[in-house]
Length: 244
Image (cartoon, rainbow, N blue to C red):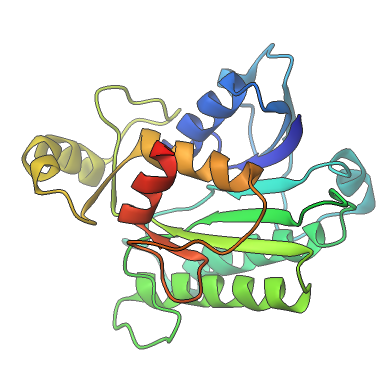
């Protein structure tokens, strides 16, 4: 059974990813990197909450606790609304790239690569042409993760997941209360769901796909919603993976 790392475990996506990971018979241990306690993990035999204040630094004593991990689901993130670009870049680019570079040093499994599952977002632009700050900055994170994976020559795989608006459904599991934008989105979700496409991504499907990719063999994906690189996945691809 696997040992995986999760970040963002108190957030909208991360809380559901954690819930499903705790219930998965394929996962033996979950190392949760968090700035604050994670109540959902309290007392669970699989969960090891590591209070980690500086997501730019991964000292040896921390990496020793993660030494047998074979995957990370990076669900940490924040809305770009109202943020300055440098602040948003620190959280969205600097943090996951620091983690990815540190995790390339973990021994992992001799039979498969370390899988880094990066929850990005619909509209991310790896070519840097987007006028939206969100798209440009997310694109930098995605592109650099792909480059890190390529440099490791099969020992490290990075998947960039691009959910649309995350549909929390009827159960809000995040520790914080929904903000005004999320409340508005939740009110519109019943109208948007029948439209399908990339606009909505049920959080349960995002969690299922994230975990399956984390536990998988690290190969390229194919099919609807998969970009040509085989590692950038839009909502239709996530839906398919979740249902497999």
